[in-house]
Length: 265
Image 1: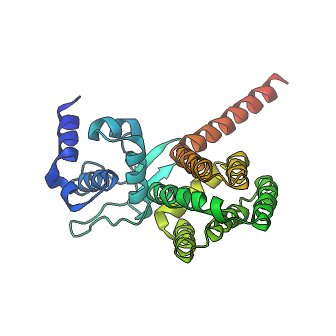
Image 2: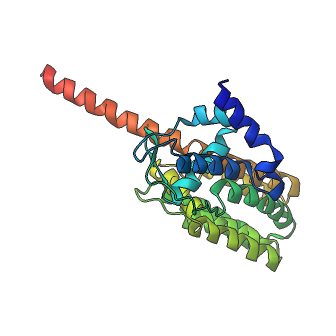
């Protein structure tokens, strides 16, 4: 580890760096990169270190680095380019301060906590009509996944049906708000848009396992199936950038093959 990397990692773990104020790791990391921009470490148009290098330099996980970069991208300081990396878009002034909205990772963690328990409660109260509605929504989800333009209507209706099956108005309101934040929080919307661009779709099999547990009126199984589904959503978000980069690589390779096949003819 270089002297700079060691110093950065030590600063990330120090209590006076914001940890005592309740900042999450990604927020502290974003502040460090923000300070580096102010200090002139990077110029406009220059490329930031790769994610793995930032992980090593700051002793942070990949999700934390991903969240930090997205937070700075949302605020217009950097531009994350498919298959290339993060580039400085503009430099902050000394009077500027980074702001943070709820991120897609935070939102999914919250959904995992609330919707897991909602599924367990719903297993005790769900009706046959609601089970039938969930099964129809699985069919709708399958059809939506085949369309070129991604829609999430069936996915949202599926989760809201489970919320309503809890017979608890507070849970319904909470889960409605989480879905609203998914599209209105800039950081959430940005990453979910990237996921859609990478052709990541709701996984019908994961949702079907939830329905099977609810149909069996098995609270523990319903909780486990919902939590497994949302943990998989977290994984999909984490690898969204890699999926985009892979798609870009496929297009490049296809172009090269086409060019050489023309020459061969």
